[in-house]
Image (cartoon, rainbow, N blue to C red; front, side, top):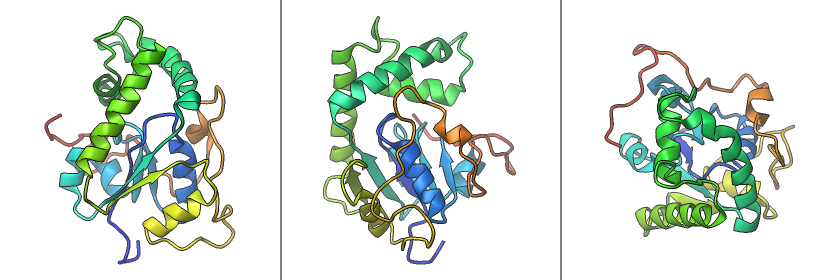
Length: 219
């Protein structure tokens, strides 16, 4: 990456706020991108990271990666809640702490943010609204008075240009319009990232010198 860019860009919006669209846009503008990260090597290799566990671990990642920039994605609750309800209904069996097949980091990240072990119906509308606002309050309180956080609604006109300006990246010739994001993972689609092919994608399970070990920071 050019020297005037941050060492890392962490997309800390919750699932269903546009993380896939942002990740694909950053790929198209020349960055190495991971959508979910389960190993140290994945985090170290990627220029930009989103989703699990980035939205829950931004404080720890802030300490580990000096000079990083953070992007908080916002979405109106009227659109986010039904989308999140759809996602959770699909994911809940796999998030079970004992029998679920998802990675332990994914289970931890979702449980920390959505309190899956504290409610009978995690996809209840009021519960999800509380989780969204609680996460938002925590993010804004943590970054208060700092200039390394961008709040972004990707549906806004010129939102992609706003992000590129924030990270010091000029639009790449031949990429998507520099003004707006590609609209991916709409409706019931939750596999947009896995189906998108690009040489700059970083595997969430990328193995390095420490194999597939993640960071030992406190959670």
